[in-house]
Length: 424
Image (cartoon, rainbow, N blue to C red; front, top):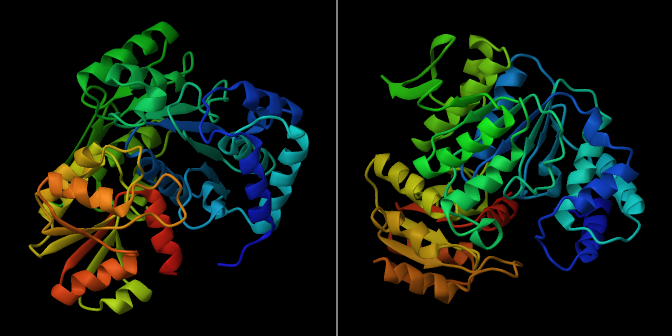
């Protein structure tokens, strides 16, 4: 993929702060003030936080809004193949010239002061959004919520919190209650919030925060319900019953994400047409994505290839359940993970569905878990495991033994991005 001017600017930005993650809003407020506060000039904002499912939920909301002919800004992270994926302007990925211009403007306004890569690029996204006409802005939290760089909108139209589980303990805390408090930090006084399914410990924290701020909650199991019936998705809230197609994203866990998206769309005033579009038209790469073209599929023409970027214990449970629901076929994993993740918690549910695992290190990723350690962790949960130097080498090992295998490439969004780049 050809590098553009924005790549050089982004590389420069990485050197502005020694830590990749350093949660505070002080630097963000300073830069936004220097940019004349673009966060105050956005179309109505839907702000999303959560541990799992916030990207899929945002993608469904966007598909629904666009199905109703609305122009939608969307901010997500991390990107998979190119940084441009993080910033969608009125429906289209930001173009190279526009991205370079707003990054340069942020660089100049920051004046070489201390700021993290995520903070300055979030400011660039807000600047681009403020200058482009649209009907809605969808902002996905990068990490946590309370001190995340996206948490600068005084009065969003709506907040959404998807399921919360243990992840990023070194930044958010080592208990569900502590992590929930950070996620609930996106709640704003009087602004309604859609809540996905949560453990009781998490709901206690969210409800206490909501009561303190006067936040009306639109919560799963209370104000809305969702379930599958006869191959259709049934959703019910105070407005009534909704019968729509199952979401285009595979996996039973997407039913809950779909419910949160539908609850958001209904709150925003959209009807059946937008809700159907949210289910039919949603796309979201590297979430149980079937790979059907490209060099990897050409190298294994009889195999069934899947790609997923989930990387925590809850994601492992969802993937395991989805693999169990698929037609029976010998399943093998190609796995690469970061060294900050609970690899045993992630692989445990997958070990019940897979016959073997080939471990890889994530290319060009400083925090990759070495392949031999991934393989060792896989053996500890009962998987027959070996290592390979690359995904293509791992795939060749698997299909040499079983040309008709189902192969799931998994463990990290960074690995998924590498696969998508190499696979075209």
